[in-house]
Length: 259
Length: 378
Image 1 (cartoon, rainbow over the protein chains, first blue to last red):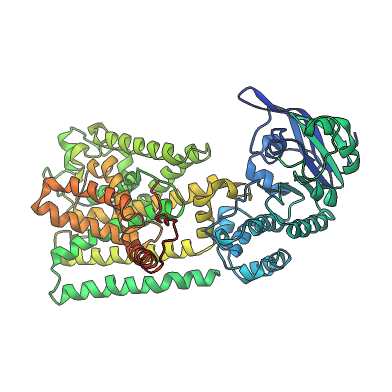
Image 2: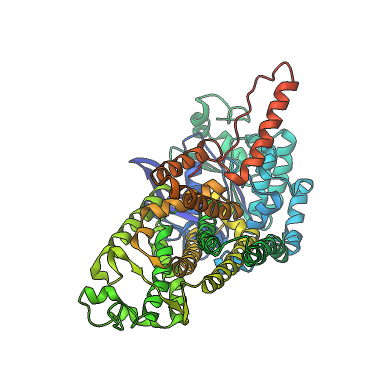
């Protein structure tokens, strides 16, 4: 398998919870400038795979190589993030008591140390970097509202925005369009495609329409192993994938893929 | 808000405090409306208020519950006490150049760790540095291992108990159960004359106003933002790349330094420091002060510290047996009725009135009962 040009490479990753193997010897990689969708039935291990990358869970075996040769399995979560990996979680986890501007200021790509923060500021210099992102997300008019007052879709966008301003090399987005309207999904899809021009984007999703609209390639995970990998069409027609989702004789489409 | 506006936010209330405490009260004293006794009492309250400020920083803003702040207070108080004892040496009952209690413990030479405290600058620096370093060590051992919440609180309480036990031992040469006492003078000025105590009051008030301004600036700045985010959703902040342990160690050490300063200002005004001011109970009291005043507001910490200590002075004079019950009842009352403390009462009343008004004037009732606001403690 060609590894050059890949931004992240998981090699033989096994993750167990209380003896139950959630990920079994997974080999997985994402190329730079690629938008990869990670799909699979519930319990397949998709979120756990993201967790392993960003350090939330430690794999029992295997390595995760980021960039040239950095092994992420030896690092702590904040170190992994600072290397250039931004994560959006499944349930919106923004700071609800802080304003949108404050949320984004915290996420801005700048030093995170105690001394840098002590002498850092929260003002116009930051606004110059935050305002364009807010505008792209259509949230500029709510800049000074508390994040907790946002609607669900807007909160998802805020969190995506928080990942964007981190300026990561790799985006990890867990169900970015869950709970969004059709329009919101389309806008999000376009946003992700723009991002994928300069970054690597790994998206965990259930919505097959969205996946077809945005993904370059799809990886199907099932019971902790990679079942199939390829273009959206190829994967949708693969009989193993069909069987895993529904049983024989059905084609996987948007409605079936929902949990 | 910008760097400079965080300063402005801090300087305005700081100025009000300064006028009240540095001009108002001393003026009342000079004019005879406030006796020297009460001014001295207030000086002690203000020293304790600095301790409460530190507690509010770590608990109200950073979400770290420490049940051992009295340890750091004790380090500062003992440091200053050791200087005062040595300054008075030769004037003790036995006329020796070492503290009296060492004489009757048959210790003939000054233990080596007492020697630096002969010099006031050293004693002052150590009063701040020892708590800060101890807090850093404790923080590295706990925060880097992700010990937090209840477990951290229990550990701090264990440390408070252990420190109290240690300071009680005569072998420690810190005065044992009796502590350090009989301070005679500071820089040649007797600690028993009103004029010296008045100066001590002013110095304490100055440090309190200064500490308040620094704390207010801190919580209004970017650091304050990070600390609040850490309190509300630590995991999220971790995944934004922030080294959480470093921030916790920083703020814990800062609060410890404030506690040390508080102790150093308290000891000369009270004239004695004993292990009973170091252990579990005094540490719990600090929590009650901040909770009652209103945590996460800084002003609440000041109000709670001064208010409860004033209440104690008043009530223990007449009903000494009732004080523990009152204190406990106060704590329970705050948890159940006023989770936002005294400072939060106006807001609570406004919400109650608004709710009663909407329920009264909107018929039929909407069916859904609004849930009470209020933060739990913990």
